[in-house]
Each structure stands twice: as C-alpha cells, then as structure tokens.
Image 1 (tube, chains in turn green, blue):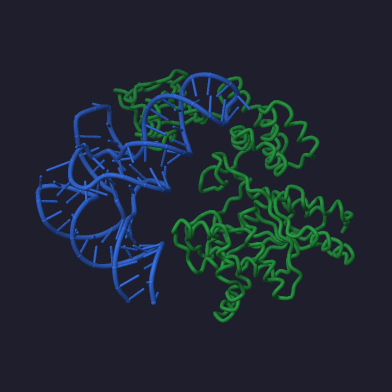
Image 2 (tube, rainbow, N blue to C red; image 1 turned 90 degrees about the vertical axis):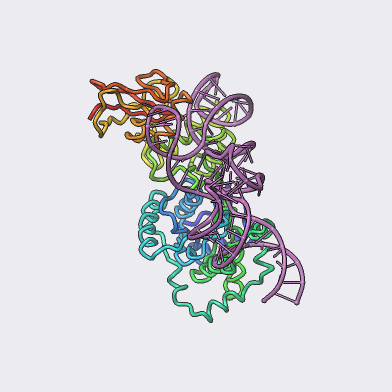
Amino acid sequence: MTTPDSQAALALFSRGAVDLVEQKDLAARLEKARAERRPLRIKFGMDPSSPDLHVGHAVQLMKLRALQRAGHQIVLIVGDSTAMVGDPSGRNKLRPQLSRADVEANLVTYTAQAGKVLDMSRTEVHRNSEWFDAMRFEDVLRLAGKATVARMLERDTFEKRMAANEPIGVHEFLYPLMQGWDSVMIRADVELGGTDQLFNLLVGRDLQEKEGQAPQICMTLPLINGLDGRKMSKSYGNAIAFTDTAKDMFGKVMSLPDEVMGDWFRLLTELDPAEIAAVLSGHFREAKARLGEEIASFFHGREAGRAAREAFDRQFRDKELPSDIPSVAYPGSWPAEGLALAVLLREIGLCTSSSEARRLIEGGGVKLDGASVNDPNARIPRPTGELLLQAGKRKFARVRAG
RNA sequence: GGGGAGAUACCAAAGCGGCCAACUGGGCCAGACUGUAAAUCUGGUGGCAUACGCCUUCGGCGGUUCGAAUCCGCCUCUCCCCA
C-alpha cells in the first residue's frame, strides 16, 4: 500500500464532508495506520430493501472510491437485519419486511451496481444477519441496555415525530444500536454516511468505546436532492438511477435547478476543484450539459455520454425529433369510423389511461404529425403509413395500424 | 387500567344526510415564457365512455335511510391526558 502523507490523506477524507467527528481523531488514526502499515477500515451501510442504486448513493460511493484508491479497505454492510426494522431516517413509516430471497436478490443487484464505482474484488461485504441472527433475546436486551431513551429521543427524526404526535415503535430505537453494533463487529475505523446518518454513526462510536475499541471516526456527506427538490429516492420517482440510459441521465441532469450544480460537480465527478470552478463560472446551460455528460460518461462511457448530449441538443435546442422514436403497431383492429385518439394514446403506452390522455389533449399537450390536437374526442382514421404521435414534451411514438 | 380526540385522494387539510369524484394548499402533469433550469401566468390532477352518462373511492365490516364521507353498532389503528 502506498500511503500518502498525513496532510494529503486528511484532505482526501475530509473533502466534501459535512460532519467529521473528530477530525483530530482521524489525523491520529491515519498516522497510526501509516506507522503500522495497515489500511483503515471504512464502513458503509447499504439498505437492501430497494434494489436499484441512484446517484444519491453515488455521493458516498465516489468518496469510497477515492479512499479505496488511496489504499484503504472498504467494508460494505448489507443491512438485511436492520431492514426488518426500517430506518427511521426521513421516512416515518415502517417498511414491509423482506424475505431472505428478496434480500439476496437485491444484494446481487446492489453489488453489481456498486461495482460500477468500486473495485468489488478489493471490497469486503457483510450481511449484518451474520451476527444478528446468532443473538439470543438476552443478547438483544444487553444491546438495548447500552443506550437510554433520552439519548434516542435526541435524534431529530424521533424528536420531530414525537412533536408531530406520530407513532414511534419501540423496536425503532434498536435501529441505531444495530447499526452501531455493526461497527463493533467489523472493527470500523471510519464510518461514512449521509448527513441524516450522523446520529446512527455516533451511536456506533459510543458502542465501540463501550466495547473497548477505538471509537470510529464518523463522516457525513451531503444528501443530494432529486429532480423535484425532495430527498432523492427511487420511490419518489425523482432519482437518476445507475440503470438509467445515458440519454435519460443526461436529460435528467439538464432539468436540475442551477443552484445544485456546484454540489453535484463536487460530489459526483472526479474533476479537480479548479476545473469545476472554471466550468461554473461560464454559462449555466453549458455547465449543466458538462455535468450531464460527465455523469452519463461515468456510467456508460465517453462515447455514450457525448452521444447523449448531442441527441439532447438536437431534440431540444434544435427542436429536431429524437432519433430513437419507438415504432409501434396498434395491437387492436382499427375501426372504420376512426380510432379515438385518447384510446390510441393509452393502448400504445404514451398515457396510462384514456382519461389522462383526454386531459393531456385538452391541455394542448398532444401532437399528431407535428400539429396540436385539441379535441379530446378526436378520432383518427386508419393510417396508410406511420403516424407521429407526441404526448407531452418527451414522449414520442410512431404508430401504424396492426 | 380510566378518560378524551382522531382515521378523507400522492401529502397536508375542509366537508358532518342529497348541490361530493369530494373546498383549499403543496406536489405532480400539461400549455405560455425559457437554457427541457428558476421565477411567473394558465389549465388539469379516480376509471370507462364520441356523447347522455355509468362505475369505484372518504380506515374495515355490518346497519338505518328513497339517499351516507356525513347517522348508528362492532372491529382495527393512532394521538393526548390521568394512573
């Protein structure tokens, strides 16, 4: 392992971090590790309850990537046991329990996706059921006894829920303890998480100390918001997923608010700070396009990133039609008196219901062969060739009679 | 254990026997304007239907009524106060 000198190492860790508890501990730990010629064990927990990663996760993963390249040992914890509790962060509702099979399936997806950012061959992966399944009730009680109710209520989400008269399950108090226990079990030197994780990370620190271990350094990185300004989450439909196409990634980046550009560049690209500053001082559309290209390229390669940008420019800047309009055949028979446009839109999947299609038509959002249609009852005669349909800004299809 | 309050569409929150597919705000979708940004303005926001209209929905199950989100009973869940 090649250990950078302490100053540079410290800078590498703390760049972009919101909380770092404690910085001096980290400096000392780095120093010690260097003397012992061992890497630091960096812990990061993943929730296996939803299968796909998105760029919100990438904030953490990019940091882990940098640390991994600096020679540190990344330890991913798959929280299959904690998933049974449901992290009280952010969401206020309990999650459904997952079956073993679901967890395993998600785990496969997760590690494959994380592999786009990390070198998984050098990454340690654990399920926390490895130790929690072996616990007896007595052990659980002992763990629960390591924290007080008052301490738990300090957590802002619990505090808010109490204030809002919302229910809190007693078992939810166990979540931070479980996460903290993971740190004890893997002897973490550092734990990384989003800013909403600070409380959980600190509990790990306490537990390690109680168990006679050196308490872990807790580091949080900003949470990035999704396309609509809320916390990025797949269930909100506002995420840029690892599995999105290059074109989708680019398009989604272009619809981000200007204000978040700086954070996104810093947290999600590997451009150096000087270059980021230069890009941000130019025109914002340009900066945003650069960001979109960087992100799309990271996941899909340079060529795909560039192509996504070009396709976008053609479609939206130059108002040309997209190059990849799906061509579909209307599955049913085409009535002699013409097919209701609303039904057609539904059947080919441009709208989810004919009611929605009618609303869209009335709102002027539907174009047939480039011309707006405003009659929700419009009937379309059976076409000889292909019809070009557009629903809203970005949904297109070419249709022919089946 | 005792007493009180409450459960309405994605979220918040009105409605308290017919005028309710259900006020309003947020979110979201669409249109105008743009840089597919923000801000602003406009329209829309259960499903089916060319249309008259029909169907499903107000925690769950029953009941009263010509008619219930609204009244009654039971059940489930939540919060508050007291112990």
